[in-house]
Length: 292
Image (cartoon, rainbow, N blue to C red; front, side, top):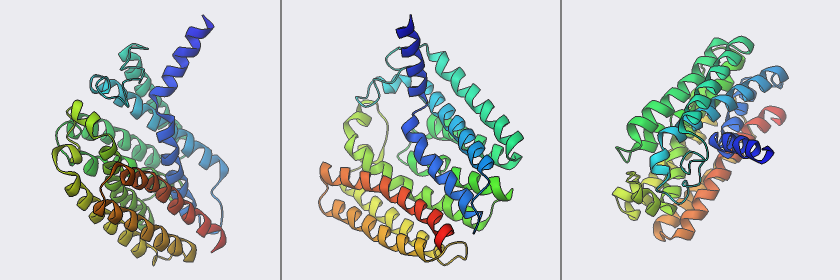
């Protein structure tokens, strides 16, 4: 009996994709620190924003698991997900997602502010209805447009402190928005056969690897330009500027290297660095507020 309960709880946790949530929370934290120059944000606000964000992201991922359980079963990477393998009833995933998002909204509304609650809910709605239901199975631009959902957390962090949406918050949104395509296209190259089996029109599936590599370079260059332009805003200083230039140069180098030698190994290196890039770039913004 204890083993069954443990397996059930483990399945519920896996539905929320906890590893995906961690990066979202880093970006939300960055928005809070950026909005609090010279002084760390109130610890209570930090905790409630992170908890509310984790609940919402976990809920969105649970609903995504429910909606995608048919194609998850066809892909090697996802066929072990709880709903795909039938470890728990499908409706459990749907109800869990709804409950977590309701709790998130109430928590942020009562403990932070209405704007942060609405922004967080909008991220879930966009992810579920625009990306998962509308775009994912229909167009290779799915991750380009759908990436907006993952770009909202830093705006939530900023709004939690300021109760408004300012230029720095928009800049962070744009950074993540343009980071998302090269990041996910590198991953989709590694999982091309999986996506093809599930009939998901990721760019490498419907186009060539060479065309995908060109798009990766274009988006990476545009991303780096955005980060450098933002470096001249008075909300950040030399630590961020140096990080944006150095990390951006490395990102461009890896993207061009993949374009000239489009191997699985190069794609894997690009994908791993893209994760490191975003984490370090946003960490530099936090450090900038402390030391610059």
